[in-house]
Image 1 (cartoon, rainbow, N blue to C red):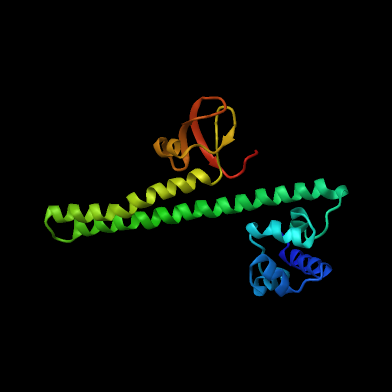
Image 2 (image 1 turned 90 degrees about the vertical axis):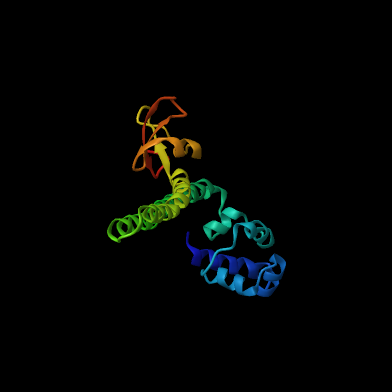
Length: 204
């Protein structure tokens, strides 16, 4: 998404309807600094503001996201480009989420490892060592549901039987046997239970 191009377009359309940055900001209940950031390409309007902004500027959301008035001739092409861009953005976001899952897992496991090492090397009563390990497990127990939620939402699982790619319910991911991110689950398309690997894209 070309924010600078979109920003210039917002500025042009604002001037076309004879509004200052301050006047546009007042009508949208935002600061004129926010409008300035949009027009310089430093930020994008929030999704909640896009429709009112387009109404004021007499443009469509597609025009806004394209950074120009889209004619009927190239409407389908622009729409296709927007959809492709959205898919790419989702893939990037999913990659970041899966990296976050790894970081979360490492951070959660470290206290357990540290507790085991201390309990086995530092002289102490057995019950104290056991309590230390149990306390070390608390971050892991807290982090696991969050890590699984990230894994469930980011990307898709691919059925090894029919090739269908889908997002399963959280409960299925939680209770499924697994090897890394590959889980033994029932496919909603062919209803076969197979080892289903994690992939980032909806289509092959």
